[in-house]
Length: 265
Ligand SMILES: CN(C)c1nnc([C@H](N)S(N)(=O)=O)s1
Ligand SMILES: [Zn+2]
Image (cartoon, rainbow, N blue to C red; front, side, top):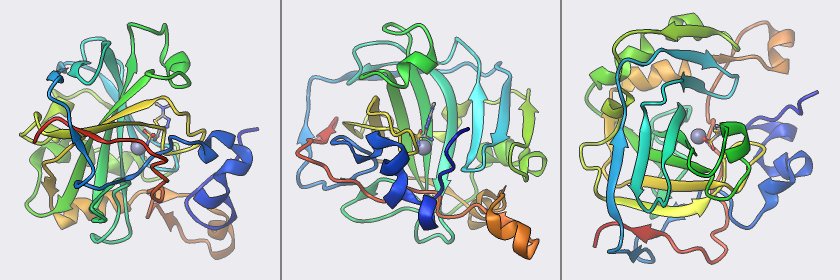
């Protein structure tokens, strides 16, 4: 029977390590990026992000976030700090109860309103995503910070399906011509990168994070749509009303001597 975990109370992040021991490891995520301590690495080749648009995807509310599963072998990532080729598996976001919080990583202590994770697995070294998620160098997560500002039309292709996934385990098939690359910032040459972990249980220490410096803008109304997703919780049975998915970000974890590299000076 899978162990329940969440973002508040007894099943919250401070207790994850009790059932998911890796959550107490030495290379956990997220972290604060102290820009005065990052090290420029001039050896990185250009990032190669090749996504096709004609892939059928499915959008699910997994009770912790919305997750757009991608099943196209034409969505690949390589270059930058990566030695191997990685394939897009899914993307999702983390957000907060208002626009002042929500991102998992912070920059010089600043938290953004939300954070996008495009999760890829290493197809050169491993035969399946299930194998790769537990292994060093198995996962690469492209990450973009999100702040409230002008409307982002690309995000409407995802948000237009939210009515079908309001409830937990709700799923919706997305067939339209959508390329997740449109969710990334224009500047894809300036990023920070470091070795960390999945930010939700089981917190495997298998992730290379690549975090773009440029922040993406979405409207406050679009951020409110993220928060509109429901999550079932014990309180629902007592009070009857839906519990909304908020603050689904993990607190900052110790850096433990890790160095965050920068692709720019
Ligand atoms: C098994 N996979 C792909 C994942 N497991 N946990 C994930 C987390 N949501 S995150 N934030 O990407 O580390 S992604
Ligand atoms: Zn995530």
